[in-house]
Length: 298
Image (cartoon, rainbow, N blue to C red):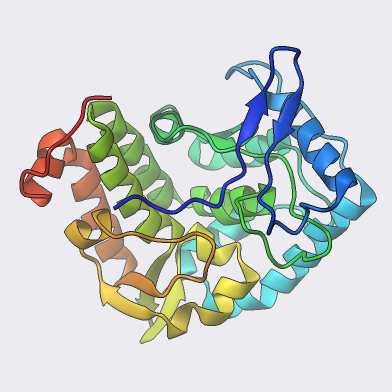
């Protein structure tokens, strides 16, 4: 049931140095300049606490260029494959396409729309910290960007995924309300298994969810909508109706295109079912859906 992870761990040493551990198949693994840059960016947000000024990253022309390439290439794909609610959020947020926005710049656009704000994180935030922050209308985001050699691919979430994927999503009132309920649900859970079950439901919905509009499958998940490649292939995946029990127990691999996705017939169905699920979710919900699989206190 455990999800396979391709994230790059961030290690802080006693001497204050910060190292991002890239796997040997990462596009930037053999590039010492990129690795040093990843370490530098990660070090900016180590120990950052909400309410403190967000550290600015002085992005290079190359890094801005990657953002511009991806932003430009995603426009026609969003027009063709994104659901209406995401496009409405994107129009409201008006992210820049010519430069990487600072996280406080994203917040200044997003907060007046739905109340959410961005906070920096060096790498993968712990599940409980990440999801529970939604109840405080916060979203933890990395600040680095993918390797310039493959601007349309990343094996891990970067600022393109966090902002183009999630911030545009969070600019829609109903999506933002779902995030809020996710955060509240996490605050009610006590066991690790219940939390992981919830995170898988989130993965197969808000990260990789599909919705039918005018008879065609459209993407509403941030993982699809921030990925040039996923947008090309998601309609060819096996698409099943929303099934919380199945999603919560389904294994997935973030390093490959998703072969199995779950869909709803309308935005109304998505909103009603996810709000009903998350607004009542707790450890007893997990126990009922998994028919008594043993749980472990965190």
